[in-house]
Amino acid sequence: MFLRLSDYLALIRFNKPIGTLLVLWPTLWGLWLASSGQPKASHLIIFILGCFLMRSAGCAINDYADRDFDKHVLRTQDRPVTAGRVKPVEALIVAAVLALVAFILILPLNTFTKLLSFPAVAIAIIYPFTKRFFSIPQAILGIAFSFGIPMTFAAVLNEIPAYAWLLVLANIAWAIAYDTAYAMVDRDDDVKLGIKTSAITFGQHDVLAICICYGICLLSFAVIGWLLVLPAIFWIFLGFAFLLAIYYFQLIKDRQKEKCFLAFRRNNWFGMCLFLAIAFTY
Image (spheres, rainbow, N blue to C red):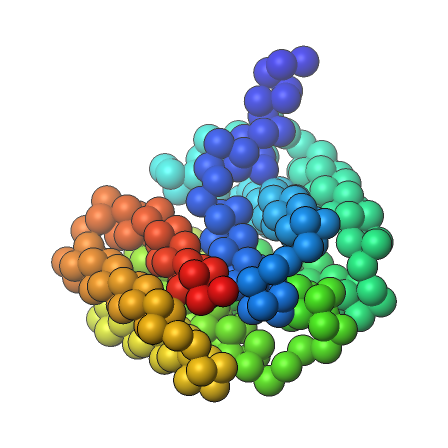
């Protein structure tokens, strides 16, 4: 029984929280801005748990979709589904149960928020399959990881102000940046398998494209800071985020796989820094 439990935990990447954090930080950006720095405890609990559940469901769907690809990549060939320890149908059941629990969590929220949850789930399901036909599936990942932003505004304000979409743009650009660095690790395997990724699409311009994406993210935050007339502390932390982007560039510029993967893992700091820029504002 415990062996099966460990396989299910591996399926949802329970021991690798970086993915949950990459979903959580932008959700907290939205929640703090929507509530002017004073979110309700209930909202905080719902969205934190929701981020964990939906990221876990996404991992299960991803492993189902990639089960025939993962066995050919050294880094992923021991994942539970492709290794045969969890059946494909079990992965789908796990994903469905987690998504259902996430929906139950938002039942106390308003109708607008509930309606937004349906396209959020749809994008989460579609994303793993876009690697077969879409040149930059990282953009779809960015949309999936951004749905917490409009949902927080809907939950708090029952509307989505225009500047909230700048947050969405910032997060999509950030997701393309860090997931392209991640894709650079597996680029050789992905080319052989015929999988499409931004690392392959950008080719020799991959590092430049990542830098541009960080620039779009930071510029979007700067426009938000200007529109909302945010204080100096916001700009100080935005400056720290800029320094982190330079650090990530130093890691990926030589395209060494270990350093590219390290850059991906440390992007958590970038999201946290942008959250602190908003949190300390209030």
